[in-house]
Amino acid sequence: MSKKTLKYSEAIEEIEQIVSQIESNELDIDELTDKIKRVSELLKFCKAKLRSTEQEVQSILKDFDE
Image 1 (tube, one colour):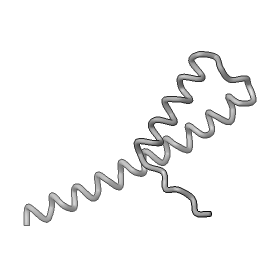
Image 2 (tube, rainbow, N blue to C red; image 1 turned 90 degrees about the horizontal axis):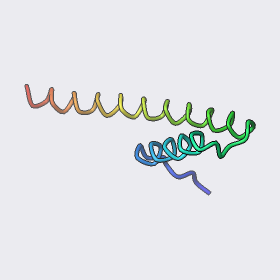
Image 3 (cartoon, rainbow, N blue to C red; image 1 turned 60 degrees about the vertical axis):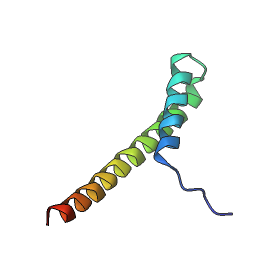
Image 4 (tube, rainbow, N blue to C red; image 1 turned 45 degrees about the vertical axis):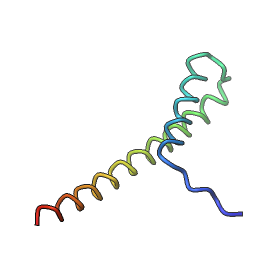
């Protein structure tokens, strides 16, 4: 079975859910560690996606200037 490609909006939504769980003390210490690791992965994904999108937009804008 193929993995579904994660979308930026889905990553943000998952981060928000985890933050909500942390703020409401829904997680035990073992879950907390796993969730923080997951948030770290999601943040890295979002950062890379934003960089990639910025580069694409800059490239498109550069084509208009030429």
